[in-house]
Length: 223
Length: 300
Ligand SMILES: Nc1ncnc2c1ncn2[C@@H]1O[C@H](COP(=O)(O)OP(=O)(O)O)[C@@H](O)[C@H]1O
Ligand SMILES: [Mg+2]
Image 1: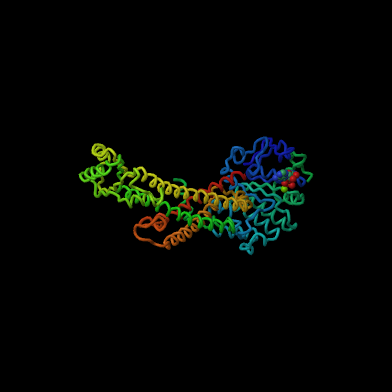
Image 2: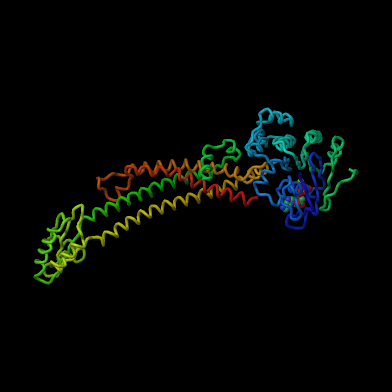
């Protein structure tokens, strides 16, 4: 679904990521780890066409990312749910309007019941009419997750989804991710939280990729 | 064609799409005001064009009915030639009336150039005969030929020489009115482009989020285009209405009217200003669309 072949990327200067090869198979569960500033967010951005590789090839759903038009990118993003590190809500819309934004912009509707079920699933039934700035860190993360999956995408990319939340909330978010994976979704979570990864490994078959020295490596069992 | 259906779709609207872009405070009021002001000016430019058009027509028809014959001859022969000319005119078809100007009338004509105490009888000033033609008119070439035979000192001046510049001036004035309308339309486009660009820049973060959740450029552009088109339409409607009221309240004069009092719209002419609001909407639609796509493309 998402494939990198010898991808190199740098913001102008020296490459931040070099010779990265990667393949996200359908239904797989990946963690992406590495110290802060290693390039985790950058790698995810390459996965959803926000950045284009300087060298090498990124293939998204069979299409070379370099040849995609702006409309192609928009269409591709409807198949990938992204939980952004900084969430990115529209503050003038209510939580429920934010959650259904991907549906709105693609001219789709979903049965009201499905939307309510999704909101219950992430535990935001009391915040549905609130506006994003009124939410706590954990609520924002759950809202971001709900928005990422509202289009029922095949792939879910989450960038530090447990960034500003306590351990209990982290486990709750992880549990939601694991449930999604059991439904057949392809998942990649970028995190520097090794405890979260350990906890996940007890629930699901997950591969751990680590960015170290600009390269991507498969982490061993030493985690 | 594509644009037209886009425009129709825009008017019928998509309330949900409208909500995704937050209200854009001052640019909204700016667009309303600018469209109203421009529509108001357009009403006057239109009135000017229509009035000068009418004027050009009136002038060319009114002037066409009179001409002059100038008789200049050596001393002693003038009177004989004037009589010969009058004889010729009497038997020329299409001449309604012919009259020799009196000394007083001629003096008055010359006064602006030579002062009031002109000794007309001692000067070789030509005699002037004023000719009024019938609606059908006369054959100027035929008349000239006969005059050449009967009164070699007579010259027919059928006014075309000085009628034309007047009509040309009126036509030019009408052109200037139309050019003004085009300039106003262009200025409106520029102002709406600036306002829409400011709104697009102010909403950079909103546009970013919309793109992240899979919105296509066309969708994002539409949210802005719809807004500015409707605002331009509303503003122009108000401006046009005010302009028409102002024209309606202009003082009236008699039927012939002079240029200034004849500035109003007449009859079906009142329908013309009604095209201003829809045209303003079309201008706004095109301008915002261009601005939106340009901004979205450069911010990928
Ligand atoms: N838009 C950008 N322009 C220039 N440098 C950037 C930009 N985004 C990130 N960087 C730099 O790239 C490096 C990796 O960033 P990032 O991918 O966010 O790392 P991580 O998510 O692993 O913390 C950092 O040093 C960061 O400063
Ligand atoms: Mg990051």
